[in-house]
Length: 296
Image (cartoon, rainbow, N blue to C red; front, side, top):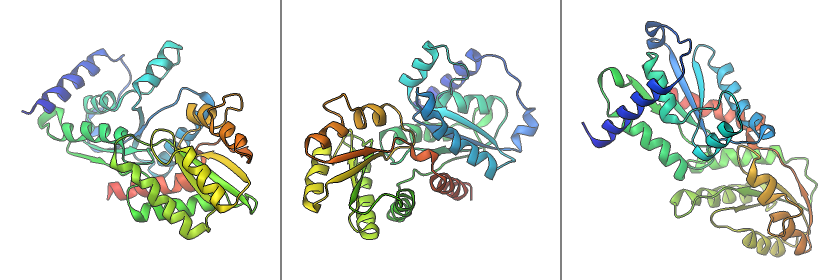
C-alpha cells in the first residue's frame, strides 16, 4: 500500500471515530445509492453562504435520488466558524469521504464549485486520487471528480455567455470589471485570460478581468480601461461567493487599496454589484450540467 493510501486510511479512521454519533442510512441502502459531495472553498459571511446553498439545492433538485453533501476546503474558514460557535460546520473533503465510506456508500462523485482548476482544486484531486488507491472496505467502487467552471476553451465560452446575460442591463459605456481570485504560480490562472478572450469576442470589449492573487492586477485593468476610453465601471466578483475579497478588497470605500478606491482615484465613476456567481440561475444550471457530465 502506498504512503498516500496509508495516510487516507488513517485520516478516514480518525475522522469516523472522532465524529459525533448521527443517524445514518443502512449500509445496504447506501451501497446502492449515488452520493454527491460538493466542495466549496467556504465562507464565514452568512450573507454570502446563500450562493453555495443555491448550488447545493440545484444539485438536490436535479438528482432527487442522490445523497448530496457539502464540504469546505478552507480550514481557516472552518475553524473560524467553529470558534464562533456555528452549528453544522461543513467538514473537510477527507472527513466527508470518510463519513460516506463509513455509512456504506460505494458510488461518490466529488463536484467542485471552484472557478478555475488551481491550487484548491489540486488539493481536492490529491484526496480523490489517493482514495482511489484504496481497495476493500475502506475504498469506493466508483469515485469520480468533476471539473471546475473554467476547465477548457468551451467552458470559458459558456461562462462568457452566462456573464453577458448576467450583466445585460448594465448601461452602454459602463465597463464591467470582474474580480477573480487568482492562483499564484499555477498554470490554471491562464483560464482567466481565456475567459477574457471569449468575452472580448462576444461582448465587444465591455468586460475586464483582474485577480487578487495573480495577474492581471487591478493596475493592468486600469490601463485597459483607459485604452478603451471608458469612464464608468461596475465592479463585481468573479467568484462563487461574495465574501471577504468582494466586500473588502474589491468594494471597501474606506480602504485606499481596494479596487473601488483605486478606480475612483484614477477618475472613474464606480458602482458595485456585490453578489456571488453562485446566486446566478445560469451558473446553477451550468453547475448541474457539469455534474451530469461527471456522472455519465
